[in-house]
Length: 320
Ligand code: MN
Image (cartoon, rainbow, N blue to C red):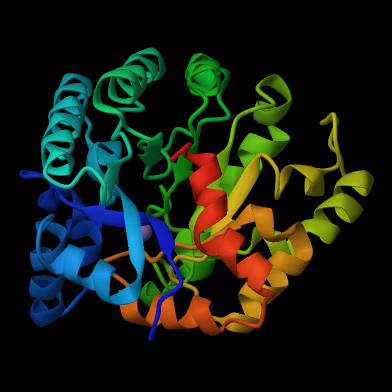
């Protein structure tokens, strides 16, 4: 069957020496699954491209799997490893330049140096933006210290993919329920909350051309837009915004379908924000490329919307 062409960009690898950072979640999976994932995270040439070919995925933008240096306590080590990781990725991409692209891995511990490394990777290595694995040891990027980073991101005209991570401290409500702390639920709440800190913290008012990408169907945010407007009007706590909260979600914040292969849900996201705010992705190798492709090809959205979600939105966003 002819496949609809697709671009995907929550697609992960791991660079040499980075697997230990991921033990926070890999310790909880079976040895068989860990082996399956490890093989794919370390591959850039065979399995990955075979699966892309079979599913009609023309191009992917690769990112270091979480948490990477977001979890590194030593600043100099974080800076050094992030730069090494980016150089490593650039070499792997060079073997398949028409199929693979890169997101920068950044030591957000130092906002100015993270901005410099972003600029280096975009201008010298041809990277398409950055993927950051959530907070850096409890620091969130609405902090004014990050304005220097957002300013550079906006000037470079590339997006930031805000990817999940474990919450900095485990909220009381998860007590006794480790199954909901991580990928199943807690990562989504953590990441959606971080995005709301950016929104209500005025990052998009100060830097109106900044684009932040959220995976996992926008970590649920598209489905609460109406309520954000309704309740923020009643409980603003002194916060003022230039636009209604909902207006940032679908413009400054765009979403991917990664890890939520539900036709009803993507139809809802398209209905809520418009098809130009919804972009296909997979979350390889944690989710199945074949299943994600089947899902988006059969989702109950118009053919025009499908083309935007699968391909044209990413082509425009990343200037491919
Ligand atoms: Mn992911």
